[in-house]
Length: 378
Image (cartoon, rainbow, N blue to C red; front, side, top):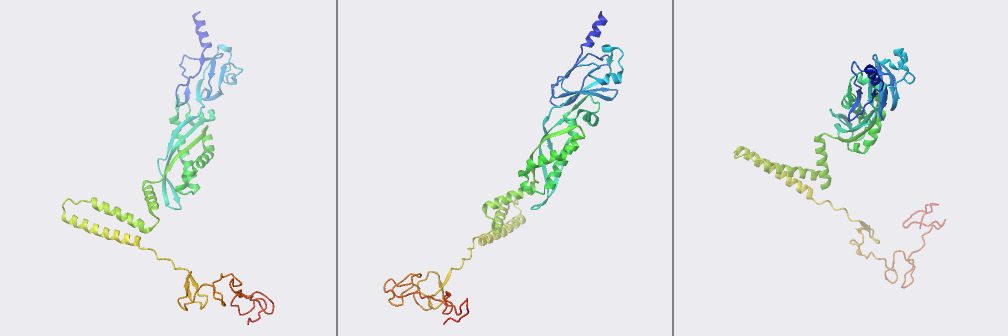
């Protein structure tokens, strides 16, 4: 009776893995030498899991989410590998591995060494970047063969050690091949991420994995380049002039000289005074250069309507002939507009038609020959 109870207990054995961790990728179900998986045992595979049976070092079968009763009908490898002769009482000598197929999110990546890039504006620059990514097991069989083998436990840290170099390689290629200016990289983070996922697809598939997402949080320039950009930004706020830049640097030099104390050393004091005087002269010269008024543009000129001399535009009298620049009626002397054809006071004709006597073409004032027929204008 006791022996029968022990056999019954083995028959009702349930194989399952209640994953309470956040970073376990592969878990080997613990079996002692006395434990035997019997036909008619129950296998439970939860969502985002798959179970792999390994017999004598070979992958026998893979079970997706669900509850299974281990029988020869639903486990073909039992008949092929074990040649069962005793029905459900025959023990199954196999190992069971549970693989977590959920997406592992929030994994961090960063560049250990700077990425060299040729920038059109700054020349050769070194870039560093960091962000997060997520991955999942896409093919459990391939993953077992290529990655974890027969380890009892395989974690996210173990996987990250293998795939981070692939990520950095993809990001380096995407940034370097884009030939985008370092100042414009931030506007293309999303495009870089999509390119990295696409370029890394084959490499991850060869390991049974899938790169689900990658987020580039920041790509930064070296500290000295960032300081130079800050200086340029300050100058841009002040003015985009070379004189302003020199003035700014001279002011900084004066500040540093004032803070440099030689502690009573006369030689050091003389050097400090000399440097201060030189900086002061440079500063004063730059102030004079910056404050020098610009050359005033030339005033617009016009010509006297009588003698043709060059006069200031809008002048009322010619400085050469002294005649008024206002349009006057030649008969009565009253002022008239420049476009008037008759004097409003006496009716004198002000503008006579200037046409070619031969062909009737209207001639410009002062024309000596007709532009149409070439007749000389009398």
